[in-house]
Each structure stands twice: as structure tokens, then as C-alpha cells.
Length: 195
Figure (tube, rainbow, N blue to C red):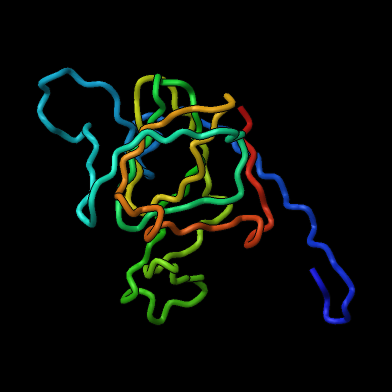
């Protein structure tokens, strides 16, 4: 970083925020989405099934290969137009950092003071996630997560060198509906999972 007199100044090293992951269950994860577990074949659709919103585009269901995703993060992302489902192939343990959705309706922000409302490059408005609102979850066994529309998420993260995940979103989610908050740039913090 350069100061006004031409000398170089450095930003202090980011503070490390340690998060203790908790196991994702339907109860612990309900503010962020759903935990979907096996159900008997032939059981009718109900509230324990993924409540999906894929209405704003063409659904894309694919296997995502990820490498080197250590238990730390400084960026967190949300998708305003779709619910997203993630699960590990084989039920291996993985982790996800999350914060509650913070998308706001433009008609609700007039006259709002003291709130940092930002328009995403994708067009919608949101409030950036607060450092203190970030949580970490451990996902183990034969289950997957359905993220509510707008849920901030970092990951999947894992201890292995590589893992494969199935991913259900829209065909253009990562092109037109990908809003990211950089905690190092905006808050000078990085998150480490303590597991």
C-alpha cells in the first residue's frame, strides 16, 4: 500500500478468528438451510425433503472435483437466485462456513440509516455478513446440505488432498449469481476451523 507521500505502508496481518465446527443436523442448520438424510423408498414428498427453488433458470446437477481446501477461509459467497445442494461423494467428512442470508428488498432500504447496504454486481442488494455471525459446520455421513437462497457459504472445506461433491444449482449460477465478500479486504480477518 502506498501513502500520499510515496512511502510504502503495510496493512497489519489479518486477525485469525477460530471457529469450532458443530455437526450439521436439521436443528443446528435450520437458519441456513436444510440437512437432508436418507428416507425410505416410496415415502411421499414432505418437509424433510429438500425445499428447492430452481425456478429462475436451468438446473445443473454435477460432480465437482475439489483439491487443497484446507480448514480456513477469507472469502464467503452467496447466490441470490437459487437454493444450492452440496454433498460429498461417499459420505466423507467435510466442513462449511456459513452466515445467514442478508439479501434486502430495495423498497425496504429507503430511509435506513446505519446499515451498510450494497448492490451486488449481480443486481440485487444485500448487507455484508458480520464477522460475529459466521458459523462453521461439520458434515459427516450419508447426508447433504440444501442452502437457502442467499445463504453465505465458504467451502466445501476438508482435510484430505481432494474430494468429489455433488452440486445442484443453476446452469449459470457461477457466472451471473455469484456475490463474494472478502473478509481480509473488508474486515482484516481470516477464519480457521478448529477441529
